[in-house]
Length: 511
Image 1 (cartoon, rainbow, N blue to C red):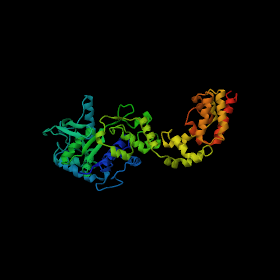
Image 2: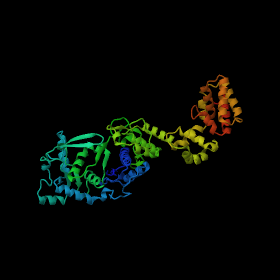
Image 3: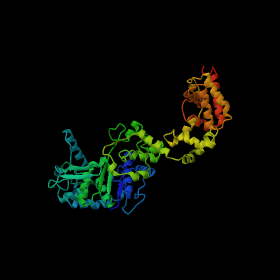
Image 4: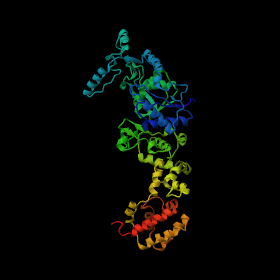
């Protein structure tokens, strides 16, 4: 059995969008599931739009996600070079083969002339197309003599692929797509696409076919936007007499509304990240990435994997290794998958739950000791982590959340204490607890003591808990109350309750 080899071949003309990242991920998962190789190839044939910063963004995104290529420009294998700009001489050889076989031809029409014809067609409500019906009406190697041909080639030209010829016996093409099934193409409707430019560089169409063949790519898995180009690529394989790879075209990632393809502009429109890591468009436009927002890379990968794929059961939480084991191209859906940012945050919360307390303590203990040593019993840092980890969407918010649950200020107290119905029984129950806090050390004993007092004095549990919480934190809601009492130094608890009761009984505090 031939080795499975899949590739991700981005064009470095802009940053790596979440859709591109998903394409890379699916190629990686399929290759690894089949014990094959994953290749990164940089398709920089568009020299005018090439952006070195974009290429770095692509590789940085893949590295953060843990999608490491087996072969790439940074890790060359035996099928290199892995940048198309370094493979120019290779493409020229194959262009010559196509021209010599009559499958392609030189075209000398100026851009201005073609634009003029296109606009004239548009005025008539027609579509301009350069193909078998009218190619003989243009200036190309099919319509000029040899001497003229040489003269034109020395100046300005492109090479077009002959998509269909009136002498061809078959005008239909049947292609199998691994996701969409069999597709039938009417070749008479295809245009003669440009496959080579006179700057010495091929267009995407020729370069990707030649490279996929020479790099022994077994499966081409790419975005739905390349589906219209499939007939040309299929014909190029046939023209060279090469074995075709398996083709699969992924569904679109849709906007949060479920309508239309997700674009970078939707990031600003909907206030959502669309790139794995930060991207500076220019001095005025900045896009914050999933990484910098605080997503665990495992959660981000999990989220992206599920936009267009499912395992066939109710399971949703996977790390990268689990995805490799589970992933199958047969479970990729045909229709577009909606981008749901709230679901992305849910994935992050679920992945946070899988992180050990030990790891979080190692990361945050120093900062907790530094910022909270005057308030928190530092011997209970592990308890602090246990409380706050269930209350945050992102681990970077842990310190902020500790502040939120343990901070106590007079303005919060005054705002909330007035909303509590402090009758004499409730106040006496809290005073009695206060009196015994110095002696009772065990938190469970403290809890039982207070619940008994509420029961004996016919105090509703909700009223009693809310009143005690306000006295200790100044707030009406927050972390589990007795867990909070357990981590805050006992003298601080006593001080806060005393201060709160004094505020309650100060008739002038809200005047």
